[in-house]
Image (cartoon, rainbow, N blue to C red; front, top):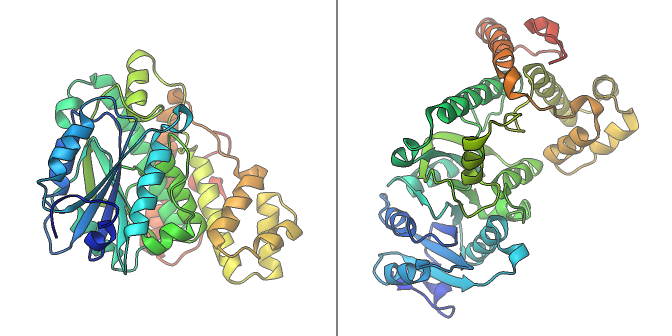
Length: 388
């Protein structure tokens, strides 16, 4: 395939043999875009792939750098410069545009991938993602790691706070895994959903409705949409992309904003996706029971779950008519007072970690002694109280 930026007339021809098309939203990334593109153009393996770059509202030297590189890199690159209205000039909308263009260029079994313009992918990034997808997986979430040079500029206290929060997230994820295992996503795994490393089949992308137009958090929202269509998602710990640790970012509410905010004031709550340990037990146990009832909706099963989630059996029966179990579960979570997500205070994190360790100690022992065991929702069973 010829190198260089390609015109609208020849883009489909240049991309038709690509096994993967990588979509990247770009805005004022003159300090990072060259490293990003050179890493992407130096992938190992026998797979062919191409890039779709959407440059939006750039006011620095990014367009000039991209155009120069597009003429010399050995992969097809489609470059589009656009000027978005202020209310639309965000990561969610621009990533949606990039992914939609990539989807239009995809042919046959081509998959869609995306990363960030300040990221550096490893040299086997494309190959590693494609290898996993071809085992029957629909989507892959990779990890984002801070550039070590940038990381040393961040105060030690922030690293320690982040490490504790990440550790707690992993403890909760192991609780979810043991109480409600997912064959597509076995342990070890991680719990990140970052636009820095995302891969998805074209079919799953379309069924999920494409990239949500929200900002920040379009990456998390996309994985929530995938869950609603029962997509097989793998959180691959071996796939990681290096991203900048800058404190002046391009996305309001993104990683850079979080780092800058925490430099001046500690957050009151940890990540809103992380709940009290007792709630994790409840959620995972009820979700497993709901999945079982979805497959075999007997009257007894429906009555048991209806009582557990404080919903009437008619409402639960309506959810059983949904096309996808994931969508039905999301609706149940939205309506059940029992499953309202509660936040964890930073000041209570140590206490919640102790509870999580206690729960996992019981679960790990039980998993070894009775691998096929099922669990009823009873926090007393794990030595923790219902109220966090």
